Image (cartoon, rainbow, N blue to C red; front, side, top):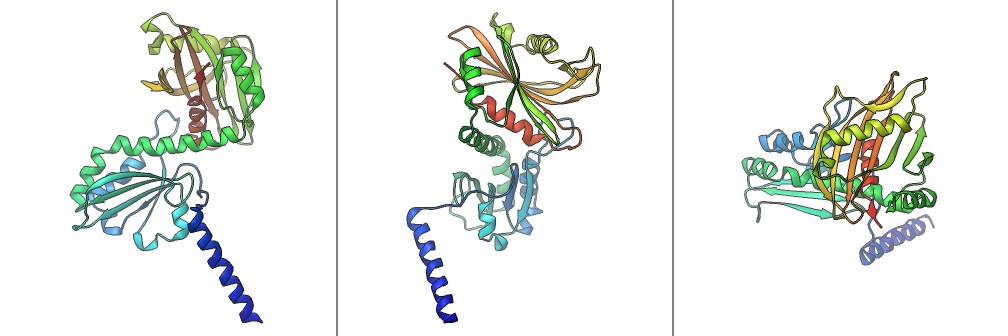
Amino acid sequence: MRHFKYLLIAIVVLMVGCKDKQTGYKPNVGGKAGEMLVVMDDKIRTSPGGEELQALLTETYLGLPQEEPHFKMSVAPHRSFANFLRTIRNIVMVTVKPDVKEEAVKFYHDRWARPQAVVSITAKDTASLKQLVEANQLKILSFFNKAERERFIGEYKKFASDELMKLADSTFHVHMSIPNSLSNKRSTKSFIWMNEAADWGFQGMFLYEVPYVGEGTFSKEYLLNKRDSILHKNVPGPSKGSFMTTEHLYPVIYKKTEINGNEVVEMRGLWKVQNDMMGGPFVLQAHYDKKSNRVVITDGFVYSPEKPDKRDKIRQMEALMYTLTFK
């Protein structure tokens, strides 16, 4: 009877496995946001090419008060790449053999799990590996950063706040996939403050707009002046006479890009509360609405004084900004 029970279990497992192969079933990714597995053997790991790859993936994430890497990286040799490791959300597979058919960097989605990002790097020797990594630095980082962002966006769409989405639409005529973890802290005819409080602190986002007055509208100086003026008026601090503003003693990182077909300026830096001790990182995107000749600003911030890890919280706010489209 006991042998029959074991046989029955084995048959069920086999049937499930066959069904998975037939239906293309893939499990959900495991691990935490920002985790990365690099699969390469020890000799490759300590080579110049292996070290170049590790340095790229652990490069400092800009705009935070303390240094944090782009990804929390682990390295495993090919012999240890078992089934449970195949579900990690971000994976780099490094193969260095003299007989590889093609030296290349290739990008894959959902190879062993969903939603998964996998980069495969094949090279004939470690010198070629180093060259491939150097030539594809931006592509590799952008691929994994986008994958992290899209995972957050997927969650936002599943757990959206109809109330806040309607508020953003009625106030600024924009669509955003706003998660129900955020609440309406304060809103006026020209300003929205969304916030999520937690035991570690809080994170949130401001929405406001400024008129388009020519190319100068997108200058760092103009946008920061507008930011400080609007936050002074709308975001009081905990003590009398205190208010949120930009920490100008810390460099603000500035770049121009395009998101959802719109011109966007992105800035990263630190905020502080004037006349108080609070502060943290922020990321801001100024979205140009050409049709209405205006600039809508999404301004995300994090306050987490007890925990140094703020990278993923800022990534969450950045992901929310990427959902903005004009009506």
